[in-house]
Length: 530
Image (cartoon, rainbow, N blue to C red; front, side, top):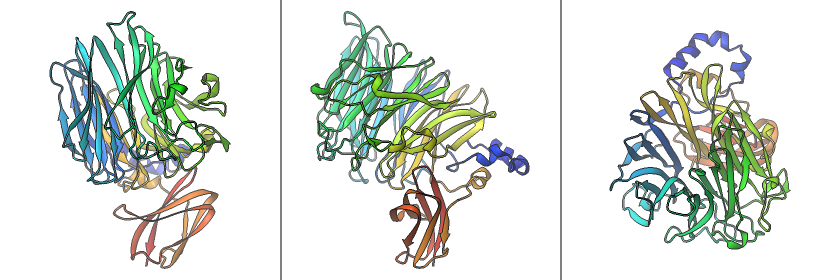
């Protein structure tokens, strides 16, 4: 975290470090970190989920467990990530323990926001999959799916929705779809096997269906699942969006990938998953489907499916994306994917998508020069194949590299109301774990934030009363957004090139923050309107 110790360190060496190339190249983002929750216990573990509603409310799920205890807490921030309030705290009942838990959020405002949760409950004799729907305050609970599985051990679950990315044909957008991936081990079957189930709703969560996607003999052969639902263009073969699922397979030796349309169309079902070979120490396979249905799916300007898979292997993050040959009319193979190294000296990857900027969002953990860091960058979907064209790698959390403290499991999501990112992560220590949060839009409040944020954007005139000329260092495809000091968006526009004249004559007098997002950079500058 951006700790007091690190702050004192920066102050002490500022005069010398300001001339250091590595210092000058560092890019910080975000502000003071917020402690959401702590769990102190022997050998604790933690899982979390991050979901941001369209009105900017941030929901966080924390699942804590050790050998004797499992519990789940739900938190919410309604003030842009400045504070978090606990809405729910559950302990399992009936002799069960929580194996895993996930949430998604749909809706646009306090009256229609719905929080969807799926929980896996386990005990020696059976396991349960339970799905709930609740309102914005986590009240008015409705149990909409409840399945008991005798002699089955459930491992992991992941849930996704296409609420923000309905298909261009209208199907799946109103009502939206929900997709859930569940993995476990069937102890009663002959032969005993691990399995991957897919539970989905095509009517906004009113009803659900279940399909078996894949099974493999042996225990713990399918674990650590992730799911994403994207959108398709009008010339696809099924008007529903696409879903993609990744998981750790073969005892965490490989990554499995399986995909279909969200209705699990039998005409496009694969006979088996695509296997991505890992070189050891596999961790955290994650997938993100492209969410933009207003543009044709392309990579490098060529018509192509668009999704991104990441996973950790031997302290390196690998990633995969589709070639032009990847499709659904015939079953694809690993030869239809490009698989390559994305980041070295890195671990714990996570993904999200900004459908306003058409960007994939990527975060991970690393250690550099004795400092632990959490980094964040983004890429326009069409440049998915060119890591050199991705944005700057920003640091949003850092701390001394101490064996007593360890960053784990960072997550990123976009705040649709601000078009900016927010993050959560765990900080492990010997007797417990802390869950932290930070936001891209926080006002800088420490020296390291301020000295790193030298803007390359030029505004003229500033102060302005009728219009302001925005001048960027390089030409590109850009989106400009103007915020007041309460974080409300008051103007926006898109332009090509390196200059744009923004009309401000209808704005109230005062101070504003102007942000420009390009394919590879983000610029922020203060603007005064007179």
